Amino acid sequence: MADEMDEIITEFVTEAEETLEKIDPLFVELEAKGYDKNMLNEIFRGMHTLKGAAGFLGFQPIVDVAHRAESIMKKLRDAEIGLTRELMDVILKSVDHLRLLIFHIKLKDGIEEDISLLLKELDAALLSSGASARADAPGAPGAPGGDGGQGEPPAVDAEEKAEIETDEHEAGSSHPQPPAEPEPRARAAAVSPSPGPSSDEQVQQLSKEREVVSTLRVDVARIDKVMDLAGEIVLARNRLLNLATKLDLSYSDDPHVESLVETTGFLDRVTSDLQLAVMKMRMQPIQKVFGKFPRMVRDMSRTLGKDIDLEMFGEDTEVDKTVIESIGDPLVHIIRNSIDHGIESAGERAQKGKPPKGRIIMSAYQKGTHIVIEVSDDGKGIDVEAVKRKALARGLITDEEAQKMSDDAAINLIFLPGFSTKEISTELSGRGVGMDVVKTNVAKLNGYVEVITKKDVGSTFKISLPLTLAILQAMMVRIGREFYALPQSMIEETLRVKKSDIKDITGQKVLTIRGRVIPMFELAEVLGVAMDTGVGRDHCYVLVALVGDRRFCLAVDELLGQEEIVIKTINGIESEECGILGATITGDGRVVLILDFAVLSRNVFAGAAK
Image (spheres, rainbow, N blue to C red):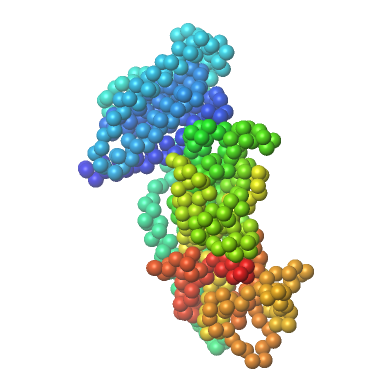
């Protein structure tokens, strides 16, 4: 019985967290947009469901807070009170308290939060808003008249009335209430047969119920286990394909070998489908991360006395679960910097001829096998000279390096640990932690960060991440006696070039490809391994890579072809330090290191700058 109760409580916590995650950004949107019946209905229902489930399980503090917040939402929805910033502050405070109360239930730590002050604030907010609303009620949208249904807002339909009556009956009750799950059916039964809710609304409600039934919660650990097994199948498939190819070359007339080749071909297709299906199970919309930022921007901009609009695009772009878990912190630091460092005060913006309201745009989109997340602001941009001065003062670079350093290289100094251009540390920023977290976390996801900035125009942080972190397409190459794998997603093309085509311009090797001069580097030199001396060889193989906006060529001894590989992490090795993502086992059983293109790119261009 105890196990069953634990399972019910775990389910309640999960659903409650999802509900709060869903309605939190709606509050911010509502504050910016003004009265919106559909949005208010959605928030009201979320609070009502949360209160009902908490009441059933006896979590009275949650019931008390949710009931008062729900009462405010009901009066807002019925246009009995007006939406003010102060009222929204109190409602958002109640959401934060609900989140904290649910967190204690999740931890099972037995801590009881004192909510008496919050309850008084909610009651006071409801009374004061009600008093002020009565003075100007005629101007409110759908302003109500007297009791008994006369002059009620046309927005309230029969379903909502039934819900409100039930709610009034439940108010203040400490008795266990019905569980949240049957609630949609109970509400449907309460709908009047008179032409209240339209048939379309009933169809939508039934569709939602069917949708809930057709979904299944699965523990993440189980999905991860399936993903690991799919990875092992990929490795075994690669080995079988390799063996089947060799047998086919030697015994092509043998009917058994022919059958083996056909079967391994079928296994290849099924394995790819299985792998894709498992990866899709791990994919989640990036809305899960983006959803918390409207509230964060609202609170921070208010604290700093700035007026800032946040626009979000591509929230339904799906990314790997691991990305969802790890990308939140980097984005928080980028947004904080945009608000505190980037966007100017209204007075400064007016002097520069900018609109008084600042603007931050977050977007996510898929580009090839990568997900790109961009955060742009229309602030002051990054002052390159200020960055250099601060780096000099902290001893991070020398005078000579500062003079030779390109703007791109200088901007990348902001990612160094402890770096900050703020003279005074505040609660929000200036302590020198943040941007290094961005770089470190993104690197752990096998991604990279680019910064594009222009003085007094704004800055854009562009984060590129692989779609999946476990399995990737790679180009296998040989340098001397060493073999390496390079992610195919960043390789534009491969070429076989004559050594006479490689030119030297002021100490930098270059290749001219279709009229474009591209810098070329020997991968052997970059990695510090021996390359084929190749007596008499008059050609080499080149990979044309594109990392962000940087295009360059890498020369290798031999291209061995593409292969689908499974990344195995190597304990104790950081990609940022040595440029190795991990290792893999190839189809012929060889253990091969996987190189990180983003780190290689930084290393080769840093070396070229010197």
